[in-house]
Image 1 (cartoon, rainbow, N blue to C red):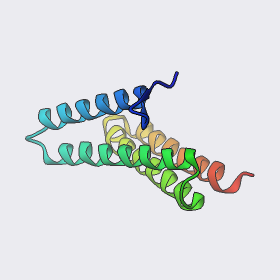
Image 2: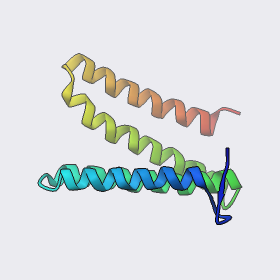
Image 3: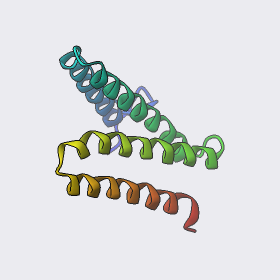
Image 4: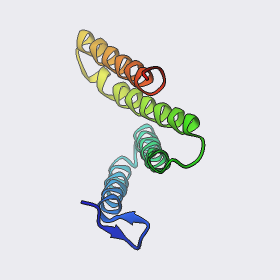
Amino acid sequence: MDFHFHGRHSFLTTLGFAVLTGNSALAVYRSRDDPASVAFVAGAYTAIALLFLFLRRFERGEGDRGRTKAAVWLLTTLLTAMFASRVAPLMPPLVGSLVWLMAAATAAAGFWAMFLHR
């Protein structure tokens, strides 16, 4: 289902990005007294926005595919580490270690799938 919106982006992509922006703005507003939380939300929003940009480039075959794949992998690894850093401290130590282990395994599997697997 790909409804073109002004011939540039699909309607669903635009709607998803609008929801992400609204949700991020609300999270920043609710966390306005906690600079670390505001920085986390701003960093995650920026990483997701850049991920959308690079995924679109990758899908269209624009630019250097190797660099685009590297940017996608770096951004997804960054997001995985960011969310693991927020979740792991809330868990018991053994489960927190498991969260980090799963994050590392996800990053390693992504690297293998994007760069080593043919």
